[in-house]
Structure formats: C-alpha cells, structure tokens
Length: 263
Image: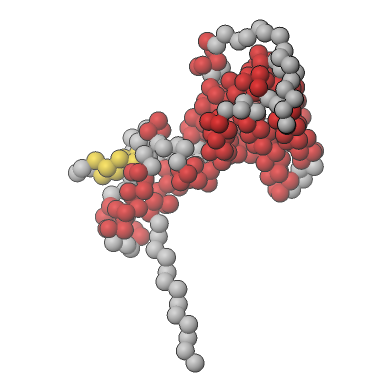
C-alpha cells in the first residue's frame, strides 16, 4: 500500500503578517517595518519570498521602499483604500485602530449627508421599500439581540440600510462605491452597535433619516444623516465635528418633491 503524498506546508505570508500589525496600529505612518533580513530570520524563509510579499504592500500604497533604509509605512492618504485587498485587511485588522476608524468616519461624514440629500430627491418607490425593509430588520434584531449571531444580523441590517440610501441616489458611482465601502462601514457599524449607550435612540435617528427621505425633504435628510454619524462617533469614543464639507454647504429650503412612481 502506498501512502498518499503529503501536502506541502504553506510558508508564512509576510504581507498578511505585516498588514495585521500596520492596520492594528503597531506600526504607524512614518515607522519602519522590520528589515528584509530580520524577516527572513524570523520566519525562516528566503529573501526573494520576503521581497515578493513586501511588493504586495508596496503595490497597495501601504509601505514604500527606501534604498539603504528599509520599508516605511506611508501616510493613510497614500493607501489604496478602495483596493479589494486593502479593504479586506481593513475589515479584519483595523478594528483596534482608532486612527483608521477616525479616517473612515471622517470620510462618511463628508459623503453620506450628501448621499442622503440626493436620495431624498431621487428615491423611487422600490428604493423606499428597500430602506424600510432594512430599517425593520434593524429594529427587530435590535430588540432580539441576545447572542452574537443576532447582533451580527443587526449590524448587517444597519449596513443594508445605508447601502440602500446610496443606491437610492440612482448614480452608478455612488451605488458601486457603497458596495466597495461595505466592509469598512460594517466594521464601524458593528463596533458602534456594541458600544451604543442607548440603542433605541440610535434606532430613532435612523427612523428620522428614513422618514426625511420618504417625505422628500433633502435638508432634513442631510441633517439626519449627520446625526446618525454623530451617534456612531459617540459610541466609538471618537471626537466628532461637523464634516469639513458640511460646515460650508448651503442646504436647500425647497418644498418636498413628488414621489416617483417608478418600480
């Protein structure tokens, strides 16, 4: 009887290891990560394998190679944050990192109030149904969240609520962006839902946002979206200020527009 060939042992993934340490905050922008030779010794792999893995981080905009010095973590603004691999690392490793949480929240503060305002102008009947269904799921899972799975479903409904608002703009860029941003939004939502001091008040803020969109009130939708995100910031213990774009925007005072009958 011949024995079946054993599977080769997978070598350590240096890119994955360093991504975890960078995204979790062990290394910050401006810090140098361990040198190639140190990584070779630490993980018992050859230098070409280390270079190949470091190249993944370079291509993602996370580190830069400096001749004679090593590899340095780049500023957050240089990271290819919408790259699928970077988004995956972000979702799995960035939860303990308040700096990255703050960057994501700042982006949402600058973008989502405008998205909500646009949705209040353009949402069709089927969009309002999608927003309402996500909201109903949000409330149901909030009240029944007695285990980890139910808490996860609550967060999934929360993300679906925001995603439906993006889609209600009927702009293909916003719709695609909501899909790309989903993992990072889920990370903030799940953490804020766990730490929310008053979940019922959070639910009420979401309800006000939904109603302002349904009633075609763009100004109210803008402000309601800011209130939802202010609650997220408070739950995460992050400093909150009105978004830089939101501070200077002149909000419309127009009357509600008629609801589209499209399906």
